[in-house]
Length: 341
Figure (cartoon, rainbow, N blue to C red):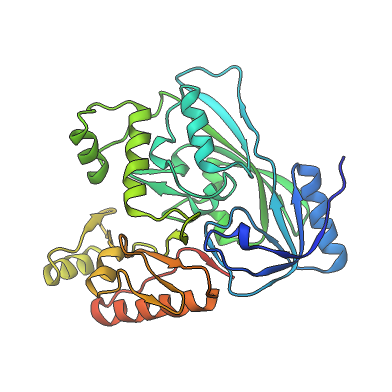
């Protein structure tokens, strides 16, 4: 078993897609379960706070990280040899790049993840956020999650039903900082009907005369749509959508729709509806705004960006301005989606 290599005063600029240059007091990479156990024991023995840092696509660093920052290095993908095209279990290390996983599963003829193409981050972060896009949430595909409980230093295997998954939420998010996910097992294959009813996706496929589409055509369409709206973090620092789309009561959504007829509203159930945060922010004139080295992306008001010479505090200042204005104009409370550290 390889010993952990501990780095001191380690720059996290390459470990957060917003590109803020904060330091980790100590930094290690754990590439297997045993090294995760070692890292937790190291933090415990030194009384260091412990934080897991993945690709950093869903964090805003506003300060240096005290104690120990743990990066998960296991990016292996294992396909159950007994599986079929109808259903195969795919186990993936928490450190695997999410979009690489989507690409690889489709190469193996297994559909299910195609709508979740080009979402930044790692496989280990997917259950925490219950990532979703274009009519699909990862909770629909999760078979189980293997995680280490930091407090008891015990391993647990959580079934799909154990995860308490809902919109951008899970048991792991509710208990932030208590578990380290090491592996996610997904159930993929033709058991999952292709989903392409989402308006933007359906329109794109129709325009390309790809109806009904193949899983790969859905992936290609999602990538094209996302690239047309979202900046490449390698070129412009960003964490994707910066705010949740608010879920309000049907009465509230109806009143907002009457006052603002162009506001996109998406029914969730008989009691609630999701409304577009991006539309509200755009209507207030924030799209394209730049201030103090940060701004709102010119093509998508839901995305806040860092131009390379600012701090996390600056982007939070801008976010709070937006939150205040939306509350004032629409009576709706926006919530920041990435974790602010």
